[in-house]
Length: 438
Image 1 (cartoon, helix red, strand yellow):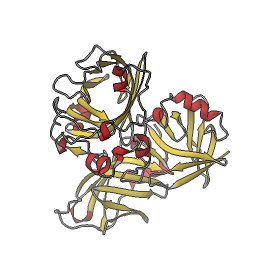
Image 2 (cartoon, rainbow, N blue to C red):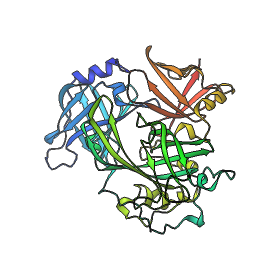
Image 3 (tube, rainbow, N blue to C red):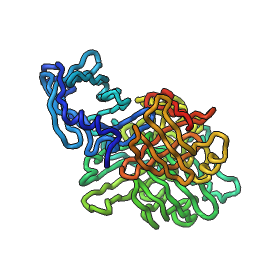
Image 4 (cartoon, rainbow, N blue to C red):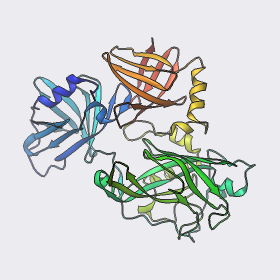
């Protein structure tokens, strides 16, 4: 598809970079850097939304570098001093930072675009040996005998169903991957879930620090497991954009050597268009507020020691703990829109928002000019950059918007508030970007 700005793309492809840089091959910063995230005026978006084919920079010895943008290649040089990274081209200067194994370019070509580069094109994650599953005889110590829970179990539900209800914390681990997913093998990411249960079934929302992962329906069978809580199977929904069907997920707490306090999911995900692209993955979840001290440190969630325990978050409401936490890049932790304060579905949230005095619906123009968002009440919208339109669909709550651009596979999202006829977006660094209602 055409991207946000043809000028930015053409300049990046055609201009060589000129500066001076390091002169030793032992420089730990040398090597290939791949754009992982793009942000403009408070809106995070997939890199492919801006650059079809991606954006990479290879830093070489003696200050030389190679740039590949949307498949077009150019050569140049670079400098780094006290963490400040600089590149020049035909009178243009590109500045940013290179530290903590993250390269950031700010206000690229004066467009307001911020690009964040990592070694593998993904946010830094932990690599570890295959996790040790929670043992059946672990003797897990709960917090004050009852895990803290943002969504307390419905007291009118049978005991077996109450076990599933509420908030969960853990991680998902990729033990085998092939094709386009090969780089995921051996990686794991923290994840969070909310399960909302009634007598007819259950809904489960799953997400990580930055993105939604899945939304699905569960059927709970009190006689389907080895303990009083029974077991559960997936019935419909999706995970990582792939449809789930009956029994794609089979959950049996306490079975197969796992403890009865954990949800463990062991499944496969295969690209419907290319069976060579697949992953084998596991999810390990425990009720929010429960300790993991019986599990080896390298098999605990990545942020367990520093955030969950170290900051005492396990003693707080899960969603409030997440809202009160910023990621390393300054962005707020992601919370699945469907549970952004309640377990009502998104359409209900949209209806409630649309009839309020501070509705998101309408056209919003950036106060500095040049950019505009239009949100229609049918769930579609348009982003306009200097009169170049990009259509999208969206879902939203009172605090968060998820955008799905029609011609892009990468969703975008941002947090916001509406007040006094202004749409105030919280940008990549936690600053406020203001749009005025037209």
